[in-house]
Length: 450
Image 1 (tube, rainbow, N blue to C red):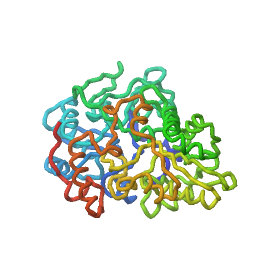
Image 2: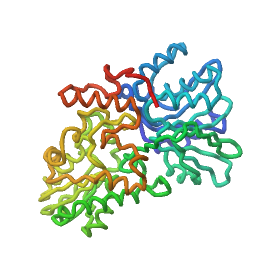
Image 3: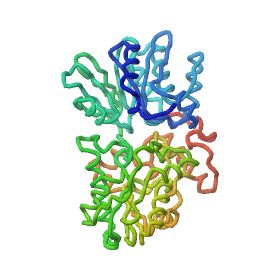
């Protein structure tokens, strides 16, 4: 049964701890963005992945997405009898095992992974000799940081700083692109395996994925989101002058709403409330489940919006489903006009790196501009934060972020090739039935080249 991690009772966890002796543990709560989406497949793809060979036994926990895995699956089957693919972590795990099988040490095996896999991968692993390690892909697309307990007796890797905070750990550093880090009794040992990589940190982390109380580059995510909100106000003053109140799509719209409030002076009316016990996430729901999930999750306090012109703050507009349902509720409650402020720029292309928006056809912005999107979702206007202002608020540069889904420029070569081919087919009316990187014409397209 799939459920939330917080619902695991303490006594149940303690029972497992008694059955699992040792001083090192890794885990993962992310669902895979490759393979089948049914519950059985998701359970089979639960991480960590464990691999066994004559030379080594290891376990890895992985965040990201490997592009075009068919050739890699064949390589693993040729070298490991009985290899079974459930998710991309199996590819990462057995690619490391292959390096050990070829007589390489950990550094050599990790370097092979970095040089041969196209995609995003932040990896944490444990070898059978107790070596505890982590590494990032050469572009550092996904977050991964280190920390230590207050007594410095325990070291940790985490995708976000908030999990360190919650366990009273101190943050040490964010892994660099192409870096391998090994945890030892004396502390962390860092090795840069790819020289002068082109960083491409996922910009969507700032708008949606990351917890607002996590930190990137020593700045809290919520502060960056507030800056997003201020930027949209300054870029759309004519719309602001027309409106009476601000609302947000909770909860990732809350922080930008504060920024809109501070920059505009308009009241932030907390008239949209999230049902805390509806735990499904509309973003990752199946198409036939998404509408009912949104409808149950978000409640509008009608008397607060009746007769008013409303700005509603969204983290992004991907398919437009969430926003469309909420706007419809606002209309039924008597709102005069509704304008959508999206902190993330218009998404025009799929993600191949671990966000489950992986076809052109599902993206409302792939074929439509802001005016058309406003008509589709029932808004009086849609205002996007500009790409330049988003980059400025993150205190990064365009060359340090992955902005592929809003620019069409992908940081890895195979992803760019797939995007170009698939976009051309999409614009000609080709119907997409699978994720772009899992379609027949894209499977096995070329090898990665740096």
